[in-house]
Length: 189
Image (cartoon, rainbow, N blue to C red; front, side, top):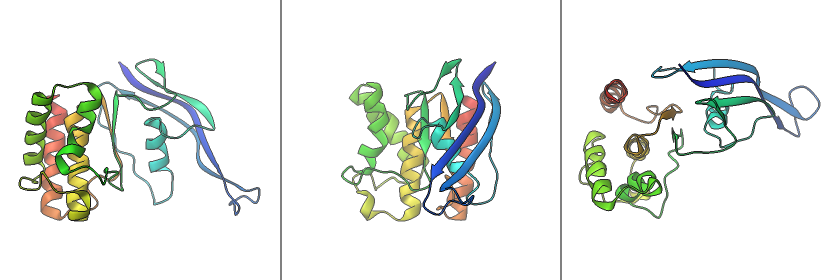
């Protein structure tokens, strides 16, 4: 069964110094793709080739210039609770603690407080942040912030998990552990 269908998507950004002389930069051009249910897909390419742009379009965060995206045969027009995203730049709420950042998606889904607390504890332990539950993002290292972002996305349990270089800011040992855990969780759920 097809989970995601991408039909001819193109994204053009306006620029004062466009690479084609007309003030436009084509980040993506004519992309077609089908992703099946339960499929794990990696997009590989050089820096600046449009990987992050593609993920942000799929997440409904930026608009297409042309083309269409369908998830479960419904056209994507914006963000939805069926998609979780781990950004390169953490995207944590600076006024929320580690715990409060992780439970954010669960709050939005209407998960009861007691259940949110249990789920949050599980994911704090999973990403190795026990003891940092009440710390704010400014009190964390870059790798710790990324672990909070990963925990938030996993705890939310979306149908589709979009991850933009989620392990880049982590040390080798934590990266290996979390890569294994993400694969385990994917296989189980």
